[in-house]
Image (cartoon, rainbow, N blue to C red; front, side):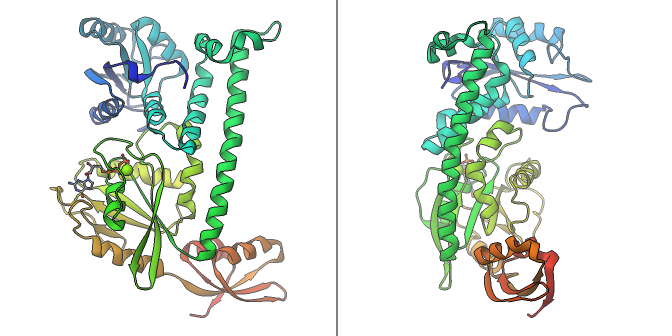
Length: 422
Ligand SMILES: Nc1nc2c(ncn2[C@@H]2O[C@H](COP(=O)(O)OP(=O)(O)OP(=O)(O)O)[C@@H](O)[C@H]2O)c(=O)[nH]1
Ligand SMILES: [Mg+2]
């Protein structure tokens, strides 16, 4: 999109990270997170020459890793012939600038690398819009010294007002682009909302597959529905949602959606931008959280996914935890229970159990309830008409409603429960 630190031109990278006790887990680096960064680099088509992990009590405000370590990395850059240094931790725009100057090569952080991968892999116009928006938001605070390419792309000189600095012009251009992209994404949301309404009318439950990147989500969709969507052993293989029909039993048909994978330290600009796609999660009737049980870090990965689900407003949606890759699993006994199943999407083991669990979960908790809604909460009645089966409405002191609700809807109106009929 814009001429900047694009990984496609870079093959030889040094990966650097800082581990400091005062940093949050999201901000910190470790051997494991550097390993994951190397996998991201591989997805982006780059080659990892060396990794450097610095331990320090707190980050250096100017150079992040401290002057001494910068020297060390610089020597590595020169001796190994690297053309980029990628930091696992988020860098502030000014740290990125200082490090670029001192190291003499391009410097980027994990967020920029992820954005770059998304930019390369986005296929649909919606995906591209979302990535472009995230990239511009990331770029905005990092404009200093980057104006040359914008000038080339936008003819910025001609648009410059008298007395304005180049930076201000750049900011204005980017703000305008952001506004335009946000406008276009609003249209996407409108189309999605209409599709959703149609689905609600047809009363087909929606099951969304979510999980850490490379956990096996697409493989599971393929195994369940006989589809043939790509499922490769690399991070962020899927960026666009695919939805397929699945007959679970004679009486139960659902729509299953495969979604983009999550990863720790997902750039927040990207999470925001992908809300158009990911808000589907909040409207799903059931989430299948696919966990790669064969990965020693599955617990941390599952936590990242839980957190993102919460951020996306889908915390209330019923969830099944699906421990995948059990054919490869060699660890302690996995947690198990009502809402947890073990499968191998690859061999098909456990899929019958998963289907039964989905059916149970979709049926479970559907209840007929009586509600007493205050008149100023009339909006909830509209919601019930949309999301539940409203059987009876009486207008007395309050609005008395009898409705058959799913657990999700019930959760949202539970303050107004009268007595339960069955
Ligand atoms: N051994 C084994 N490998 C699996 C299983 N399920 C998926 N895989 C492999 O894991 C890799 C990733 O699978 P995908 O289905 O692409 O994973 P994903 O969650 O869709 O990944 P992204 O779209 O990149 O987020 C592929 O190489 C699959 O063949 C499984 O049950 N067992
Ligand atoms: Mg996938």
